[in-house]
Image 1: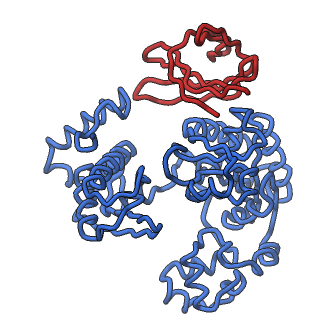
Image 2: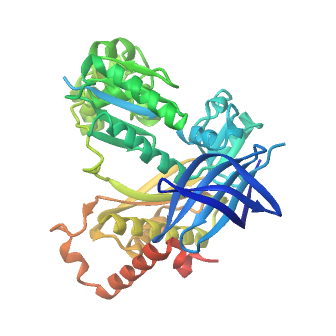
Image 3: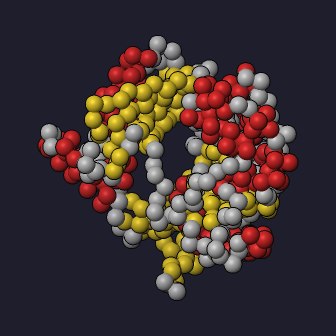
Length: 83
Length: 386
């Protein structure tokens, strides 16, 4: 079951080939390592862009996180926890 | 002879969700609006279709047929993003690509290395690229025109590839029911049935003059379709497909017979329609109101304006008038408003219309600038809030 979270998170990301790629993030005191980015998309909010990432964590949990170019903040939007 | 390919992504929204979230892979997945509210199925994965769940089906019925299905809210941003990337793949094969919807496109392969017999090889390459880059499947139809290509793409879904010529078209489709023709809905099929037309072949052989009397100009189009005749060009994405109307509709959280609620929703929808018209530089001269009641009976009523408009206020006032005239107080499930009879703003026939209310015009322009800069919700009409 997918759950909406919408909580601010801290993210470590790398900029490579003109793209931003999240590597790991901290949520509720736990560090989630990104195993695979399964997809991504961009939403326009006026002039600002919000970059969304679909992510599989190392323990196969699924996360959707986003980066708001206007506020420079990351948000954990939704999760699908395995088990 | 032309070589046209029609590419139709298989269960597109559901397939994208399954790729983005691998937990959904192989499961009956139903993409809809907010699953906690009422509404209809946008797309169902092929696993869900086995239970009879189809696009357009009310969620209540879908849950009855497939109670163990996974119901997820669609994310248009994802689909648009993938759709734009698919367009980049198509452009590698021909510059003449017409996206006919978010998950379908026509490609004119005439004059390319994939013309004629080679089209099949091109289609295999396109399918391979789509699979490699997105892990998605597409069904492709190839034919001498757009209509036949569209019909062919639906023959072997999912992951199909069918190339036909006019003779194949007659052999395959003439024995099929007339409602299998692209664009023929239940109402038209019923009207054709009353004329004794049951199959596509019946329609192809039917006297055109009788159909013209019954359906007007569409009578000839119906015969052309049944015969597989279509000379319409593939309009490249960079030229833009002419827009016929712009509209928004909304399935209410609960059926309602409250005029206040209906008017509030109508105001929000009119605001959205006006905004889209102005964003894309269109004006229109006809406003249409759509109402669907609790028994799923849908009516549309329209009014032609005295001139062109792209203003929320004019759209809302006209739609509200239509509501007052045609709503009999029954409970309403869905309400919608659209504007048609479109022309590009600034064309000679629309020029003089915007001089009379410059103040209102300037206010709208300021609102649009704010929304362009800060997003749609930065300013909303007080009448839509509660």
